[in-house]
Length: 214
Image 1 (cartoon, one colour):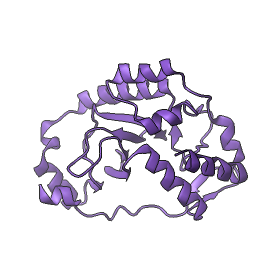
Image 2 (cartoon, rainbow, N blue to C red):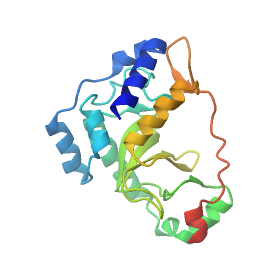
Image 3 (cartoon, one colour):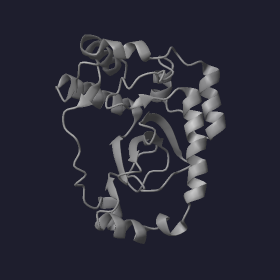
């Protein structure tokens, strides 16, 4: 992951340098341990290594190292977002919405959009938030994937659009993919140093294999 991280930092320094001003310093072992203690979820090796470099972003601007306004959460931010997620989840909990039959009906009808082996749940106690965009689009480490997924995979959940997608099998792979996409010209930067993907996903994903087989 270090090589990919260095490529990202080099690219951002050359194209959107102000973004780097909002990265926080390293997280301490105690801060990382508190995340694990408060959430009951592990910090994967690759994400732990990243936190030891940057304990999130300061949230003072829309600028984001990972692009599209996806701001890195600090250890404290992870804990706060996780607890908020669980509170909302309890309020919205409906067992019917957590069945295979419900998912097949809604995904087949293009009401819910799913890409990859991720369960389209409202919220989940085994999702560890790592970034937040605009207060509602979140990326998580998913420790309870759907059939065929990888524990610790990176997912993106957009409740407003009812979309769920797997971005990478691990945080380390996620960083590698992002570094490659930056170098391939798949992101641009505006006058205010905002990093944004050139193409937006049309969400025309269909029914994922794991759900079709279920």
